[in-house]
Image (cartoon, rainbow, N blue to C red; front, side, top):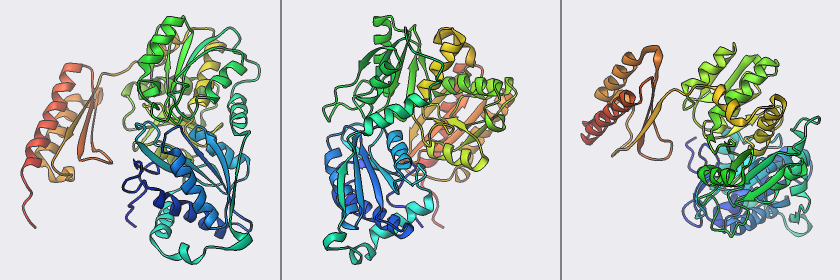
Length: 458
């Protein structure tokens, strides 16, 4: 079945246009309730959360109305991180969870993500069923009346439940007493919960990005703009900084010197410690094809293995579950610790790094510097007239092969189409920055020339 609504991370787009309208959101809510109702022997209970976007009110009401229209019970959490909704779905034995968020996108956009009763994002086949229900007429024939119409209630204690969950992922024998932390919540979903987590564990916490107004989510703050958190760390003389994105499922950390620490370095730091304590299942870390070659070498140096998958935290989780693994993530800061959570969680990730800092008694700058040696990497994005399979671009393919041969085992070439735009992404890693930049530019130039020529009619 071709997918019209769902991408790699739910549905996302400009709020109140196209597929991101209250009408579509209503039918999504109805489809989720109907689908859950066929699976269980009771009135389906569905948790609905959101981030801090202005349009969140619009879609929260529409999704809840759709659920109620099919006889479901709605549990409204208000603004909470995406991983909090996954946790609430499982801990409250709900039948599904819905997050209204466009994650790192600007405030004008919004999106809808769905979790199953196990706290994991819906698999493709179930999302396909939801799409079929939205497009079909079955939902309109099944609407209950009278006392069978659904209802909604507020989960007033939802933030506290999530704070307790995150704190439980931090070792009991450790405390953050005396640790100075800057936390940047990106004016997003963690604006209340993130500062509470660190202060309740004893840290001296300075919070920024905690004044959402519906329009400032991700704006010059958070994981997309970690330089803001870095400035605050230096200004305050803090021990480290934590920058989250709008729905708090991603993290970029800042060391005491103001240096940014991305997902690759955090994975290297955590995975090597898990290897040494025999906690990394099958001695294997999962990362995407975009993660730096330096991460792969760091894991191999500790007698571990890096398993790569397609870009997207969804594919990281799928690979982990399929192979029975417990840790993986993305360079962008999506980090999944399956021993603690079912999806990427910036705060849970921060707990794991803080535990290492405290146990080893060393500043984050030292630990990060030793975690991995980054291989020079360049990424060139080129917008092209149309998307064609690389095998239909022989000169481009030859340029790729030429670069791969020149680099040998000392580098890596990855050329792929963007999942949403007619952009070719050319990523090359190798020992010399200027050399790999020239290679990437050569591949991009060949692609431009070849796609400028229309293919012959077949």
